[in-house]
Image 1 (cartoon, rainbow, N blue to C red):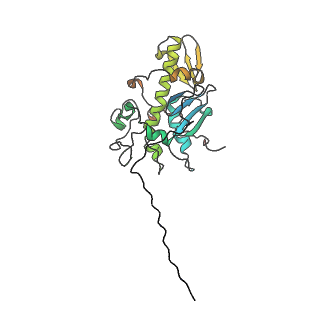
Image 2: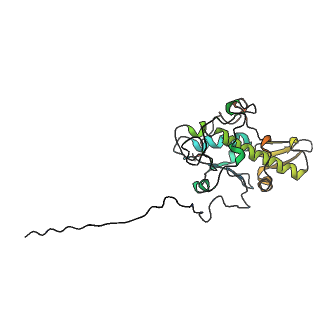
Image 3: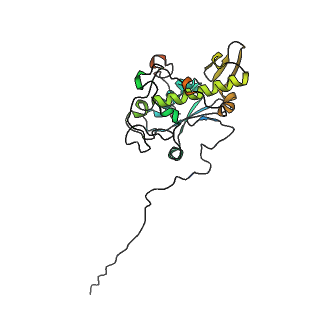
Length: 237
């Protein structure tokens, strides 16, 4: 005698059309007085360690190094003290890029002040067209786009942080910011001989009002001193 049995199992579930992003306790972007965030891309510790947040995935193509170089070209920091860190996708989903950084300076490649973001179409969070307007602009990893599409806003992030550090030092010493220079994580006031390091001034810089966007310019390729040079990849021990 052969007996046969049949049965059925049904599982029901519901997928919401959208969900609110949750903030993870202890997320790396939380304010920490010991490691001041100069802007969303850059954190400077008292020991002068510079953490650069990278929005693309390192899969052997060198993006941790190339992206950091684009930021540091403008930041004028000590390259030996640079450390990469992945940018938070959670934060990117919750925050938008500062409005002033979304404006194309000088209409793309013709920017007389150096650089300039090419026109990539309309900006939106989906990134279907153009570079998204979320905090880290674009977090996808494909082809050579991290350099091709990201150079302008990564240089801009470094330039903004440099100007904020210079403003903080100028305020501390009560001198014109034009009298200050920055190189290798050291700010110098030549007329008085005073110096300070980025690590020493970073806490003040993090509280310094945003510099006038009109004063923030980026270098053109003929002015680069870091980009285009050979460096050991930051993901290599």
